Image 1 (cartoon, rainbow, N blue to C red):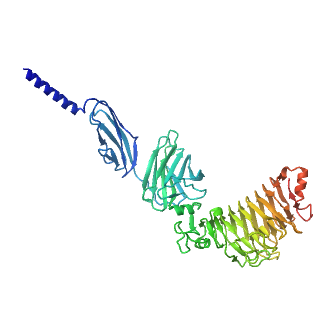
Image 2 (image 1 turned 90 degrees about the vertical axis):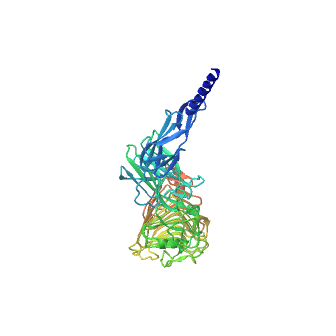
Image 3 (image 1 turned 90 degrees about the horizontal axis):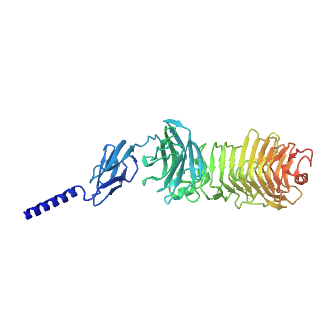
Length: 593
């Protein structure tokens, strides 16, 4: 009987072990937790879910994975989820030891948006509720700031090492191979998804969710196979009212060299020039195959094109003749024209019948020269050079540039940094904005009509407005009677304009004549001088040798004294260095207050 009891006890113990093993061992499962929020994925992408099983004792902590819809998403034994088709599925992790303990996430699989055509780098388009919407583009901390309705999205570029690649104002969003994009925004629907895609071939970069205020911020690496060239970034979300919002941004993926050379190029650039890496037999229409000379870029361009010039030293000037809407953009001080020879124009100006220049703009319309440093190199005034820039019978703008001649050399009545002209029947309209002028021989800015003729019917119509920038002369000299800015109606035409926010300095002639910061001559009409600074060795601040008054009452400073607020004694001292009606009753007045 004792043996029988013993055998029964052994059998019962073995059964208990088997039962405990079947239940996962001694202990219990407390909870199953998937270590992820709900998933939002593009078709073909995968994500691996991790799971934590909270248990006591030696209970088995394995889980079984399952999908509620394998046509949308599948999941393997290791928790790897594969997005199969568009839709929504639930993926569960169920405890093997206790099937009442489980956790689940929702998997939403999205399709790539429809993009008919890639857009050019720097361009943007948007739709709201499927209808075209206006995009207002700005720049903020080196990123594109794009506003669509009440939503604002910031798009920034980063190199592969995380270094920011700032988008210059008016420039293209450029990113290096292996780089990434940062995307953030506000004014969207709270707690709503935002999807980011990369085209030409649609590549899903990732998705995020806005916070309770409708804001978000994310960073995504470019696809490993992203090719050099133009691409489109698509940001899809919902506006504050819940309508679908889609924003397309053209970006350029570039090599490090091209990115560095052409980071300043504006949207819509059609032609690229690099003195260091270009060749004039290259295609020129890509930053990866630039031309070598500025003239080659201009010759290749059509009306309305942008020619972008990399930093470097260019040993030849250029001519723009008959073009319309052409823009030439340099990198500022780094883009420097240092000519080995001048260009004979065959066009007269003042005392010279054939102007020799570095740059000629002739009979052209709406031309912009921006971010260029134009010099006279080592050329000799009169024999080799008459003007650095000759703007003739043309309209347009010179902005954010520098024009520097080879300096004071002789008593010749030529040697202008900038010469401006027009003959009868022609019109010149030029805005000179934030441009520094120096190194002239005779006049910094020489505005004279008639193309060398004194016939009273030979002059054209000229309007030149100067705003910002500096005109720095040679300082006291007996070599020639230098002037900063000259307006002269010499041949019966109309010569007019205004000066605003300009600094004029170091202009003084020690001979018998008087040098002036600003000289108005003949019948020229210089309407206003405002917000300007006259300082250091200016023999005459303003010389008005015309019958027309000049209004200089607004915020002009004369050697530290604000003219409009000067005392009578200070005003008298300023007037001593102004030539106007007080010196000759045939002249108009220069009004100071």
